[in-house]
Image (cartoon, rainbow over all chains, first blue to last red; front, side, top):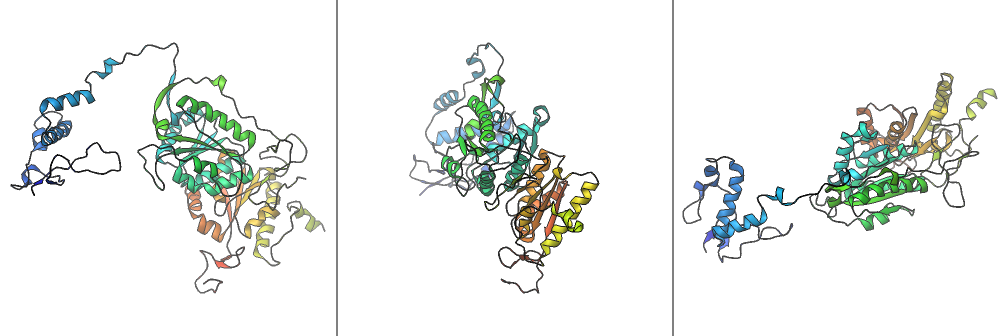
Length: 333
Length: 149
C-alpha cells in the first residue's frame, strides 16, 4: 500500500478528530517535516517554508501554499481553489456593508460588560467565560466606583462576598460551572443567613473543566438546584446584551428585596459578543431593601410577607447572621 | 460582685456548653477583657465585628455579645476580609480552630497574611478536633496518642 504524507481535517466538528481523506484507498498519515527529509517513494517533499521566506509576508503564504498543495492532492484545480477563497474571504468586505448613521449615540457593550450595573464590590476568580468581567471592571474600577477584588480561589471569592454583603455592600460574584461547584457550600450559607448576593453563572460546554472556547447553555438544572439544603433562590437569564444590562440591575434589586442569593445565567456567545445597546438609566432602579426601623432587631423576624427587615453594622445592638438554625434571633439590650 | 458583673454585658443569654476547664474559657475571658480595654481607649464595640469557624471554638459566636457573621468551616478568614473591604471602619476579628483554619482554610490564612489584611485571627489550637470528638489537627505532635492516630 502506498503511503501518502498528508492527513487533514475534512469538514469536521470540534471533537470529531482528524478524519482520513476519502479520495484515496492508500493509507494516509500525518507528518510535519522538512521537505528534504522526505525519503524517495514515501511522498513528495515541497519546500513551502523556505520558498515563502523569499517573499514578503512569509507567514500567511505558508498557510495558503499548504492549502494549495492539499487541494491538488484531493483533485481541486487552481480555478476551483481561487473561487473557494474568494467566497470565504471577499476582498472588499469593509465597503460592502454601508451603515446608516443612527439617531443617537449608543454604546457598544459585550454581555460581560453589561452585567455590572448597581454594584459596590465585585469579587471573582478568573475563569474563561467570566474573566472578562474582571478585566473590564478592573480597568474601569475608579471610573465606575466599584471595588474589584481577585482573591486566591473561588471559595474565598464567595465567602468574602458574604462578609461584604453582611457589612452592607452590594456584591456580585461570577464564575462558570466548575468554579460554581466550589462555591456551593457558601451559596447554601447565603441562603441560610438570608444574604443578598448576585452570582453570574457563565456557561460553557462540558462537565468538569469543560471547553473554554465554545458555548453551551447547560447550567439551568445546576442553577435551580444549587446549594445543599432547601432554600429559595432567584434564577434568570438574559436573551440579549441589552436585556443583560437591565436584568442585572433588576436582579440586584430583587436580591436585596428578598434577601436571598440569585443566579444570572449567561453563556459565551452573550458574554463575548459586542452589540449596540440602549442603556437608559431611567429604566434602571436602585435596590430598596426593607430596612429595620426601630425596636428590637431580629434577623429572622416572622413578618406577614415573610421578609425580615435588614440591618447592617456598625450600630448599637446586636446583629448575628448565623449558619446554624439552633441559635436564631438574638435580641438586643 | 462588681468584679464579675462588669464582664457580663459581653455575654449573650445562650447557655455555655463548653466543659468546665476547657481552654476556650481562657480565650473567652481574655477577649472580653480586651474589648473592655479597647472601649476605654475609644474603640466602641459596635465597630467590633466577629466571625467564627465551625468547631467547639466556634461556639464563642453564640456566647460573645458582638455583632457578626457565623461562617463556614475554614472560611471565616475570608469572610472577615470581605467585611473589612465593604466597610474599612469596622474592626474585624475571627476565632478559628486547628482543623478550621490550619487545615481546611489554610489558603485563606496565607493570603490574608500576603495581603497584610487588617484583621485579627485568634487560633484555638489544642491539637484536637474537639467537636467531632478527638481527631488530630495539623499541629498535633507525633508522639501524642489520639483517637485516630
